[in-house]
Amino acid sequence: MSLVHDHEQTMPKGALASALVLVATALALTALVKVGVLSREAVPAVARTEAHVAPAVVRQLSFSDRGDGAVVVRDVTTGETVRVLIDGVPGNGFVRGVMRGMVRERHIRGVGMAPPFTLTLWKNGTLSLEDKATGRNIELGSFGPDNRAAFAALLPGGAV
Image (cartoon, rainbow, N blue to C red; front, side):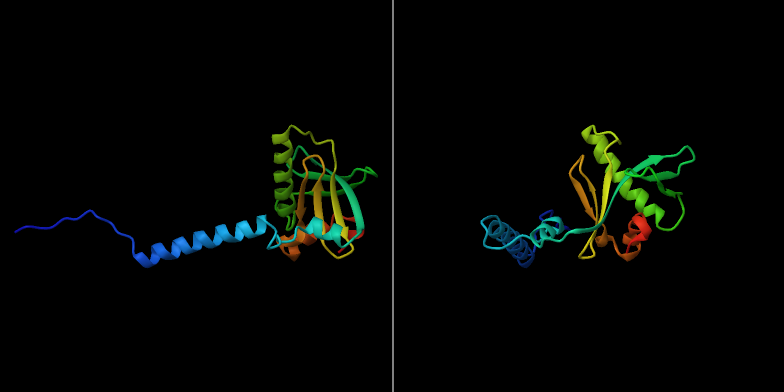
């Protein structure tokens, strides 16, 4: 009795052809964007500038750790404590998580915590957080209404 043992592995021709079409399409679309035939997806900050959307409310904020693990948010202009973010309170986790990422970026670039972060509510209703020290800008509306509201609560009067 003789068993045939074959190690040859073949890929179905249809799957290989589909993969090649997908790669070719991606390369073609990328090339069309690069040469200007297709436009890039809008960058919110650029779109606001082109549409001349002005800020409605701007607040310069600093974030500092407290000994008990809370994060203290201060208005840099007035020195006022805006909020104390205690772990476990709804909404605080999102703000703390975003700020950890922003601080990590500063640490990588060797930037300290002295420069403020700019929280801006724009007249078109968008909300952004900018770190001018690193050039990083986060569009907060893209994280859903609850997470956006957690940052909007840091604006004067909890501006919507």
